[in-house]
Length: 88
Image 1 (spheres, rainbow, N blue to C red):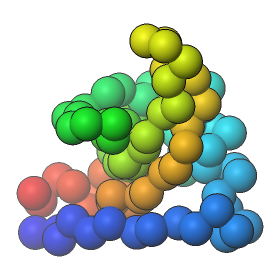
Image 2 (spheres, rainbow, N blue to C red):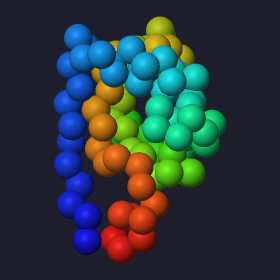
Image 3 (cartoon, rainbow, N blue to C red):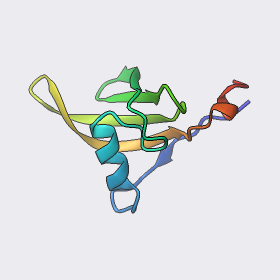
């Protein structure tokens, strides 16, 4: 069984701009598939899950009124690998 963990990614990390820009257009940063689905949410945060590689991200969008705009932050919940998730 794979243990879930949160990986904080600070804004100065070299991967951060790539993650934010991919997720802003609904693309998985791991497999580049355009199959991100919305998972559980709470408050400002929501989870995005890739239907292809099962990568999971916790994100917080900036809202302009009621419309979500660009993401404020991203955390990686699980690295995408179907083999790891088949056992959970």
